[in-house]
Image: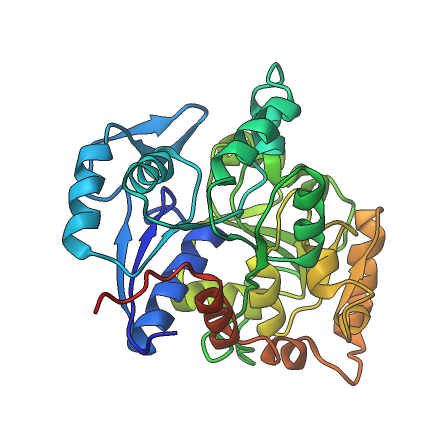
Length: 349
């Protein structure tokens, strides 16, 4: 592969959204640049956008084919990666197909389950059919885990390639003097506060100590009213986010639909054991088949059982600590994996 590439990444998910897709792409862009590649992000910023129905935090930019045609022509990328299946992703896909430009895509989000959770009248099978059609022309469809790769192959997806996730262990780290101003233990959730994240399965649990939710989203106001004893901190980034992790006792991941769960690695890097359901995402990151996974996490269909088991790990740490587990998973390895998956235009002599 060429030592210097011009890489165009198209994404509908971008700041000020705070989620795993945005964090992954931000880190990817930074790491690609540090390796000497030129990266251009096509995002909703600076474009006329409309709020997504039922999720106004997500802004969609429509009628962008002409603008994207010009931007792609001017940048003349060696590789195009379409990260999301939103309006910008659709426009970029159309431009690439019209002009014969090869491109890769990524499957970050379980849209079939998410759409069905918000619009019960839409069958999941219909969304799966649309997703399969969207990704079909890609030279590679990047997925975070082997479980997801196997599942998508069963849905008829082709050209599937692994692109895992990592964590910056110099940024996410234990902070010995970090404390919360309430009674412990502290059970922390970090992520979007939305129905598809299954947060209420965590909030309704009978657990000792205090529950903390870090994040924002459409379900925050209703859940904060329903569970007044839960601490809702809103969205945090940077050092405040790291301190929120580090001051807590156990990280609880109630989602059943995430394809990976970047926050799981962040919590582990800050020294927290993990409680989760034994589903895709947690199972691929800290499941019993992952070396060391059972020493840093407890996965159980009874989430309370998983939480109490993780609390025992926090009280009596094993030889392998959550921090040591996270240190073996770097972002640089993930970036090199991404580069190997790209469809690179040959140099013209």
